[in-house]
Length: 260
Ligand SMILES: Nc1ncnc2c1ncn2[C@@H]1O[C@H](COP(=O)(O)OP(=O)(O)OP(=O)(O)O)[C@@H](O)[C@H]1O
Ligand SMILES: [Mg+2]
Image 1: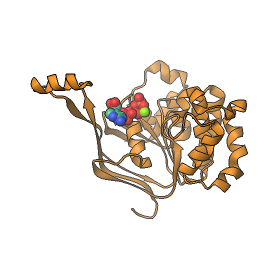
Image 2 (image 1 turned 180 degrees about the vertical axis):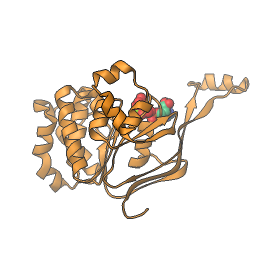
Image 3 (image 1 turned 90 degrees about the vertical axis):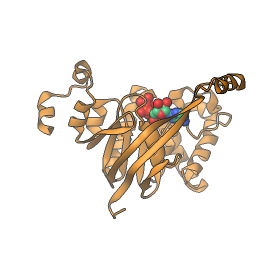
């Protein structure tokens, strides 16, 4: 990795095993009949790209195209079968709503647990706790078990902890999909701050409007492969959102023309 590189993904491939038969009896019957009882599925297929420090990149593509899996490879919770994924510095963010939370512990307890997992000391968490709680806006639910939270509530708490970690790379997946409008706006504002502070941002999204506002590059995954890697407007065009959706986001023709 050279001095300014933040994330280097080099021919990374990640396979999953799909099992067709669930019970022992079904598997035995399948084995006798010489049917396949499992199959491997390539979720990330020979993906390569380099992200420079301070870049803000949107990861787009259809459901199941491998975006979350790729984020997990970058975050380090999964390893590629072949190829490599190198990152520089501390990584924070929300890769799945409720990831890393313990359902039986309260929101308050989970803040400490989650912060520790992300590498924050107890003293640092204690210092930032009021800010974290304020941003999450959970009120009295902060002292109820996270298992009873709605998905939006867990996303709020997870996102709030993540933005309070001093990280070099910030990953965001799903959070904006489950957050309500006021929370979404707050998240976008925070992510803009992260971007302006020169940290690297990787943001998974299906929303052309926010991608355009927040990112300077789009990578589109198609069945686990990189289908497009380039400018924001061209990237949004590439994913071929229906015209009415583009209208809704008010992307003006002039603006699109200017970027291509
Ligand atoms: N742990 C797993 N075991 C088996 N298959 C998995 C696993 N995780 C993901 N997959 C499969 O890998 C493919 C890519 O999934 P992934 O979650 O990365 O997609 P995505 O692009 O994030 O989709 P979405 O837009 O719906 O969030 C899917 O077909 C999914 O079923
Ligand atoms: Mg996903």
